[in-house]
Amino acid sequence: MCAMRRQNSKLGETRLVLLLLVCAGCASTADHRVKQFNDDGVFLFSRGDYVGARDSFEAALTLTPQDPALVFNMGQCHDRLGDWRKAEQYYLTCLELDVQHGAARHAQAMLLSRTGRAPEAKRMVQDYVQQHPNRADALVLDGWRLRQEKALPLAQQRLQQALALEPNHPRGLVELGIVYEMTGMPERALALYERALGRDPMQFEVAERVRQLRGKGIKQPLPD
Image (spheres, rainbow, N blue to C red):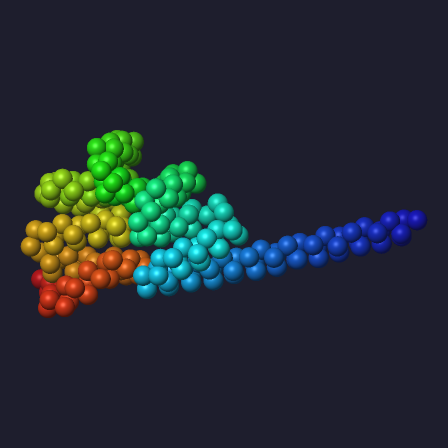
């Protein structure tokens, strides 16, 4: 009787191990499919096929519906397609899933500004900075706000403050580069854009800025 119990126990343990292995295999397969869909979406987005990119990200979301990065990507597609209401919905959902998702907050602020709600964008940014005065994301966003208001010296100061906290912050590098372009320092802008692309090569608009500057014969400044 004891031998039979031990045998049944071992059989149960074997079944449990097999079940765990099967579950792990399913998870691995699902993760692989998510990566494939996401990679396809990123590629199509880079080619300007925002409908195809949206469909790929949507397929990935059916497998991982709570993934903030995929939710944000969906918002970006709808933003590029001109459906700002859906884009805003995805940005807000992304921030509900990840309150520190800086790219979604930045995109939401830009969307508010573009759709005639600049005062709301300003309040949102100022509240964020007040709550997180030492967070690079917040300072970069405030630098963007100041640039929109043409307060370029203050924007530069704010962005330099952000980069002192996080030297390779991709959006911070790009925003400061834009300020340098606007103030007649394209060489310094190019250096920052290329540095930002080194940290995040999927910034397609930044890559286009680099292409345009290089097309004008702009080169990075020589070291002192």
